[in-house]
Length: 94
Image (tube, helix red, strand yellow):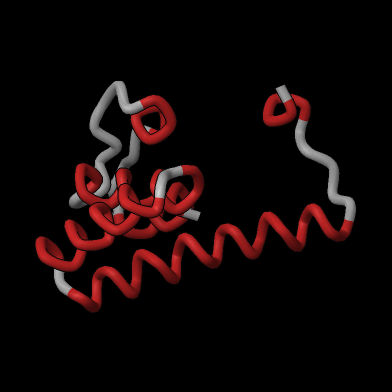
């Protein structure tokens, strides 16, 4: 979805940077948002609390809500795909 939206806005994104942290992804505030996203899917409760506080204090409460909604939306899409039996692409399945 980010790649498609970039076509309309004229922005470009480095998705390798998102996946492995090797480069700037081109997303504003990625240094704050990526740790929050990572903490929601595999971090400790303390790590999640710290990441949540960082987003809220540096970007504001509305940004925290928006980021959490996007993370939740992607999680929901994945669960729907899993529940309906949609197979993973070979490159994703690894």
